[in-house]
Image 1 (tube, rainbow, N blue to C red):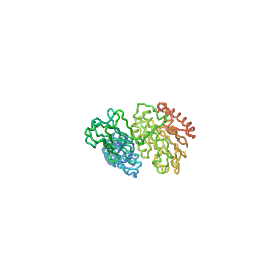
Image 2: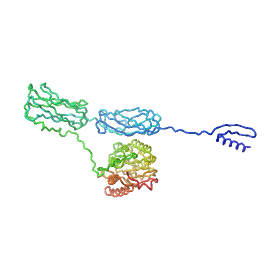
Image 3: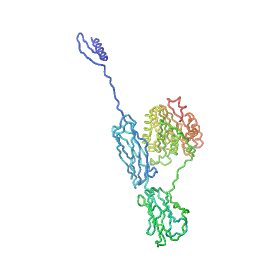
Image 4: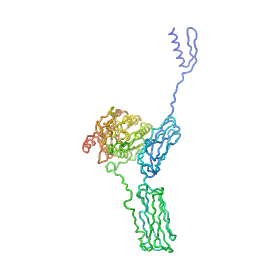
Length: 572
């Protein structure tokens, strides 16, 4: 009987699925009658989400020295883009300092951005002002973009140097009287006064104005103006002004004084002068007037010049591929960000390595300048934020994307696990948990689905245990574990095994980066990855023994996904 009831129930459920009328019979009586339609189809709707990124950040200051000076106004500007498919609601920007010890610094703390639709970009400006009491320091800004539902952007970190107020010092450097044809000065004849105004101070002089004033009413202005608005005078800068006047025959004195009044925005760093000329004094002709600035008082500014051959004559190709994205990092000045480290712990030439590599990436390899993100002396937050940004951009681009990651700086392994890390400038060998794990970088890049991912590492990962700190020559002593790669990724590393990544002092580069750039320069970027590998390994290995008396053998690590094809990839 139980078997018959079970069979009846099964037939009933089949009938239900077919949308028919079903009866369940027990013996000769009807137990239940159900009339149904087809079983409903359950559909699930996934809510569209926003995806906020910060990009195109710029710092600008009035003096254009890329620092926040005492008494100076500046600003940080960036864009917030919604790469997601859903709207971002009530977006708010919070700005703070990681190091609150920077005194005399005022800036916008909050900005209400509002809603950001999918695909929309909004511009944000943070005003920054340096107080008159500001000191030499590094202001580490942390900018958070918060969204009402929790879909925040990855924070942006920026390091900006500050320096104390540098006063200007405005003086009349020289003054010469002349007449049209020379000869003695005569009443009722035009007289030219040429002066040279100079800023002999260390700071900018702003809103500079100058005027000529006669103490005696019997002197008359003949030229177009006796007042001059000169704007900004930088340290050492000069301005020439011509002032034409005469003394009428009513003039009774033996000399003619001219007062020169000078003002600037702060009201206390300009020095008025009075110059005099004698009646009947022999004067030079106007076309013979030559005056010079005060000797030895200008501020000398020497522009750094690098002599390496690879820094010059960089091949240029106007073709750009919008699907290419790059992140380039040069970490050199570790001692500036970590009290207790001396300058020997810095990575010689790492900033120059990254800077010149960026130039080749844009000029030679076809990366649009707006798709190349460049960091010097980067903190953990800055490295993570930019890595997140290029990964999202590549993911949105899809399988046509190409990614390039370049790093010059310190690398260290965990002393116990031997897992290798890239070391931001604000991280020491004793707190690797704050560093950037190399495997996380590979994973994040590979997950984008980009068709080609190239990684160049001018660093080594062989040691510097917790008690050793960072070492000067990019050298360490613990052999790191070799990373297993997934996706379309190839890694060019400066070293093998327990070797050190060494500098090439005469070329002001890491020796690995120098030969990498040299081959790109010689071929204009038209070469395969196999050609590049063979050249770099051969030349670095030989030259390192010659100039550093140490072995350095570059290595290539590839994903199994591209093991049969990577050699034929083209660099551009």
